[in-house]
Length: 192
Image (tube, rainbow, N blue to C red; front, side, top):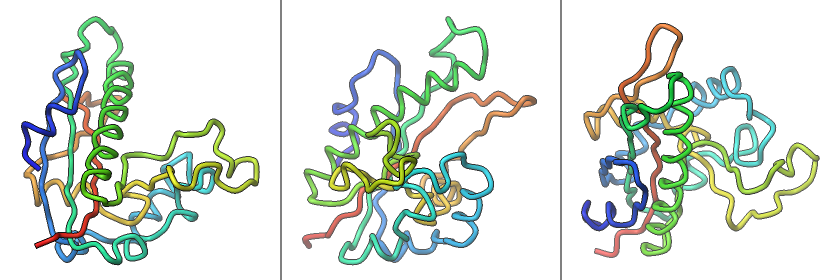
């Protein structure tokens, strides 16, 4: 898949930038650190144990990659100066993330269909509100629900640094990033 084609699938008034990389599953496996990454989810994520798409319920990397040979990694990012009309930095990030997550999920599901693959989307699933897990019920849309790369144990920061030379930036009270980014990937079988 070429970059111009992928860019054409993104439709938004903001200038969304895109970086992609295609790697083999063997290469992607180098970034698997299930224990540490899933433990970070437990400590830092409010969705841990509360959504079917999140640990400890999410499937692990090896469960999902079985039968696939490659992955297209897709990183979308927006510079926060696109949101000059928003006064508070944290609100700029929230706005950027909302735009990016929506566009990333749409793009990844399109790639998934074209390649008969499996998308690993960014963040937790938000198809149902609230998630049936919170009500102690089975997932209402298991055929549509997708896991994130982090929930399966992939160290996304390291993956992006080493395959795309791209650094994720994190907001804190002392640091406002220049841009916000979301990352997804689509697992697929190489037909060659």
